[in-house]
Image (cartoon, rainbow, N blue to C red; front, side, top):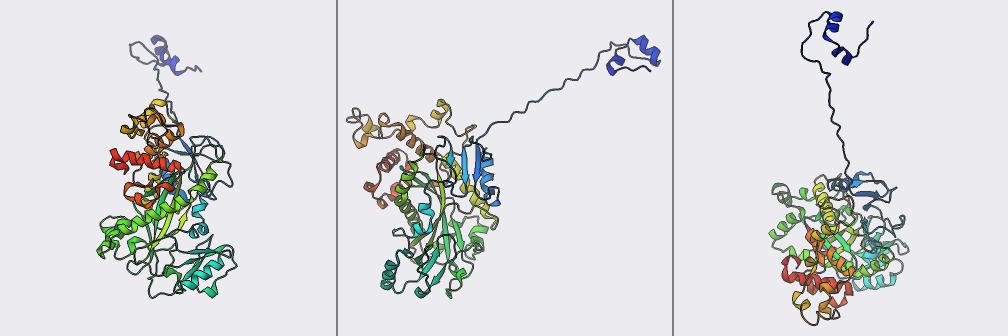
Length: 485
């Protein structure tokens, strides 16, 4: 039997094909059909990489962090590579990971020593005007007894450093020998909304230590209301005065619900509108909130500085905490605690998803994780790209001083230290980062260096030299651009 391929069959002479098949064939010249297949080459663009450290790195509590990073073009990688740009640590990483010699472009979302702020005992026993009196046990038992005797009307709670189970106790009920606890004054006349006590959670970002730069997220504030009305008061019912996981959200508080659900306001704006409707001014609260957070971080900054000096690069770190505060009926603010890895899961309250993702997005924009510049890592870009983002003229200030004597001849006078020719490499990089943060701050508000309206709240002379230097730069920038004020 004759076996022919398709091409051979097509190209046989007409007469031969006729004799084989006895068919009438077309007379045009036969050409084999050739199909051209276009080979598509798919390229995979290299993008910056992040990895997660924690007990459950794939857990749902981090879903919004993953969402935002993916939208920003940051790819997740495993922890078995040194080729990463961002480490997102849900747990404190510095005890278990060797991060002393990170590369200059790598970022970690915690500072070494952040526990100086987030440790409940350390924070509560810090002597500051906004922190209710607290005493370590048993070390400060004598001081506590003196305070209790001189303030007989005060009530106290005994708190554990590792959990939230607290309750008002009589002095004879307190375990004075428990080394893991402390005693703190109870705020017994809280501001109420529809009869409910509440706390407020302010997302706070530290981008630099010495020079210190601190921002708060002003897009919204987390409000959590106790699920049971405060009065008639009953100390045995902690749901009346302690905010737990099953708190009452803004959209279920009767006086706030119309603002939030009908008119589209956030939690803070709904609260502010309600307070104004009662004839009181909410700005009184927010000025104190900023001051309380700023004073605490300034107080703790020297402790951070000592630890960071052990690392190769001091600019590898940033921190996002949530400060929890309460307000009494006189509109006095009390700072209660700070959370190192605040809850960012909306699994329990779905409407919180927007708040959390906007907080995370604004955080990443501020610290440079988010960028509109295409890149394959956080490493420095080519020099012309870096200059496009931040040039010397963007940092230059004090033109009148810098162009005249004595600054034209010497950098020694304080007023000349901001002049471009006087800036050392470290100072220049600090100012470059401060400039980029300012340009990318979005819904983040700088609270340190202190804005012009709050300068009376901080003793300038008590600041470190680097903090004075950075404060002067913002003050000079303010003279030509109100957005820095």
